[in-house]
Length: 467
Ligand SMILES: *[C@@H]1O[C@H](CO)[C@@H](O)[C@H](O)[C@H]1NC(C)=O
Ligand SMILES: *[C@@H]1O[C@H](CO)[C@@H](O)[C@H](O)[C@H]1NC(C)=O
Ligand SMILES: *[C@@H]1O[C@H](CO)[C@@H](O)[C@H](O)[C@H]1NC(C)=O
Ligand SMILES: *[C@@H]1O[C@H](CO)[C@@H](O)[C@H](O)[C@H]1NC(C)=O
Image 1 (cartoon, rainbow, N blue to C red):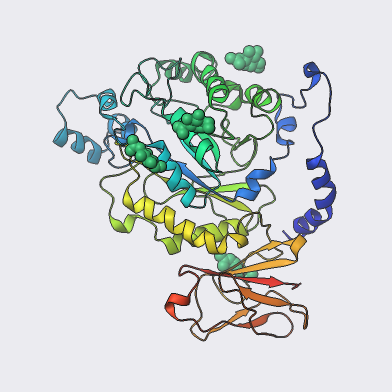
Image 2 (cartoon, rainbow, N blue to C red):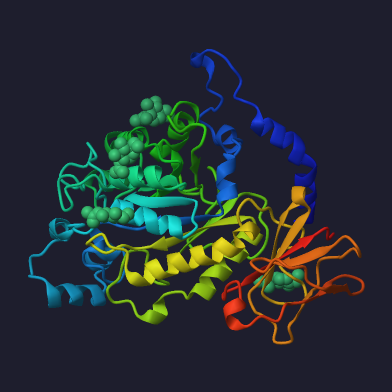
């Protein structure tokens, strides 16, 4: 990992110049830099905004939010796997002939106010949002022309949810607008037919998934396209490379869009834009490729669950730790909430979002637009994670436990007498420190009363001129 860091430092300047150059001029007909091959697509530089953003909010919302029981996989667990808990839930609460489709009219979104969501998302400190435009159930949150009677215009809300959120986000916030899209659908007859031909037939992608994806991108211009659910089919079944070449060469978002790595069986952690590798991926060490940790505040579900206990939700201390670890290791955090069938963000999710925003107001300097440092975490003191801003000669040491002694030992940085300065973010005054041999510095933290603390869930030291 050290060699990657060194190589990066050496490459930084030419790379930066390259990124700043406008795209080469030329007639539109030959301005197609990307071929429909992974070799070509994988070489596309990730638009710079994504790495700088560090923190996004994921939103899982759909017909599964109506039963809001178990998880967003409700339909599959109930009808396909026939898990007893789900079968019993239906038996106890619904008439015997009730079908999953009958949940759709109950998905009213009665209190959905995109403007209010936008305010909450902005308050969280996130720089992008990713909404499930369609999950594995196939219900589209926009009036898809290819999802007859199974979309939010024809059924349930009778509103274009994707449009409303897009407008509110773009009008009221500085967040980038992104969309999740499930390639496969659990029970779509054409997908099942293709599957039983071992994906030699391509009826489903040709008549459903591809036209829908093109429609989605043209209509809502998402800057994150979060693909998911390959259904066990390879990327050539999904025509992924052809679609991505269009997305990168010709689509209205070709200059700013980022995508992930879920474009067909075997692609994950290998091809596409940034890597997600697995749900809740958080490796704890630096990766040589941009990655994202997608995780959910409810430890057991992405969709809203009425049967969640308070202990099922991560505390703000745990969420801050996720963010800090992830960013120190070069990743972005995509933190998920599940709205209710009414379209409200429950108080517990709203509180976590606003808490994160409070923390970032003080400590955002150590998160946004930072780079990994030569060490990701301290070698001596646990729960200390590093980020850096090389141009400003700044290293940030984010510590998640306030030491009882009032002294924080950092085993990694080397201080220089007369040059190194240490400050606590949100406090501002210079702190005393002493060098220890061969490496490390001991920092004397300020003695603060409880209300004087800049925040309570993790603190950041800005170290200037350390090596
Ligand atoms: C929607 O939320 C906004 C706050 O962003 C508020 O001003 C507005 O009144 C709300 N609209 C409705 C219909 O409640
Ligand atoms: C969004 O902004 C445009 C232009 O400023 C305005 O016309 C429109 O009414 C706004 N829409 C909403 C929902 O705020
Ligand atoms: C799928 O890709 C093939 C080339 O591999 C192309 O001929 C075809 O038009 C594509 N289909 C769609 C619907 O994009
Ligand atoms: C932190 O650093 C130490 C020593 O460099 C290492 O052994 C450890 O695995 C790291 N990770 C975590 C999560 O503490």
